[in-house]
Image 1 (cartoon, rainbow, N blue to C red):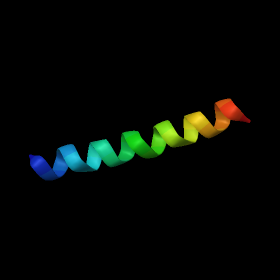
Image 2: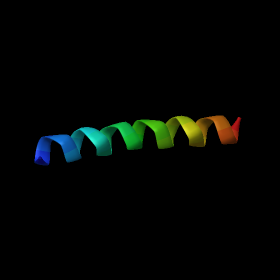
Image 3: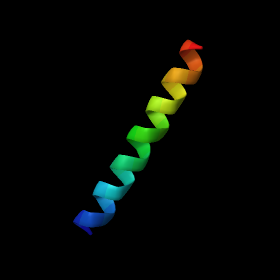
Image 4: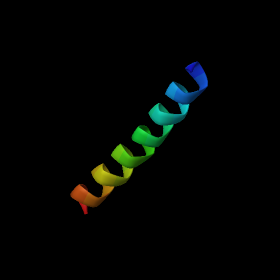
Length: 25
């Protein structure tokens, strides 16, 4: 269960970063 949470968090972080970069551009 903990592993899944970590994986989701990593995915969200990557998605958020991508979204931020896209918004900035």
